[in-house]
Length: 149
Image 1 (cartoon, rainbow, N blue to C red):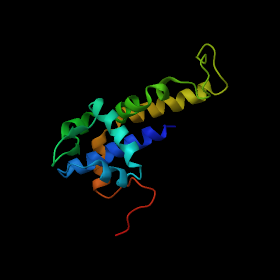
Image 2 (spheres, helix red, strand yellow):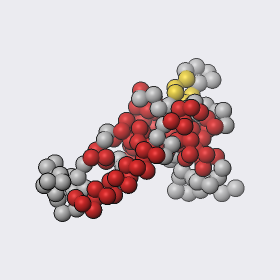
Image 3 (cartoon, rainbow, N blue to C red):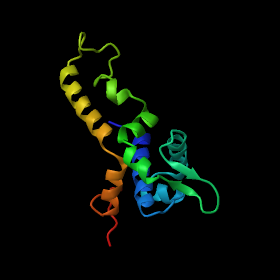
Image 4 (cartoon, rainbow, N blue to C red):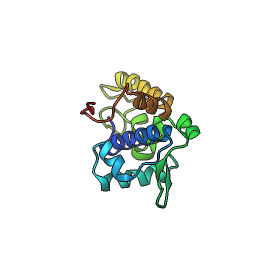
């Protein structure tokens, strides 16, 4: 559904937000490790997120990435998806047909429109703060293998 880049951008944003809830800034190496992403790829993703004002990049010896609490509350997943993948998931045909529309529907049009609307609602109503809180409380995780204590 999302590009690999977008998946990593969402994971990175959630991880940065979770660390920001604990008043910690995180570097690229830590983020890449925690989301199981190559460092160079993670750096490019973080540039996009920073350029779109979704994460804050702090330079210097005590630098790193962070997200302020008010930004965490107001940033919805849809903003991350749009910054990385554009708005295709919100408007495109499920079969990738350019001329698909309500007047000229593809075989999946009506069923996919319902799914697309549900996904849009989910992405537009879910904040980074909600997801980061789940991570910091231990109720959710970001990697396919949970860290066993």
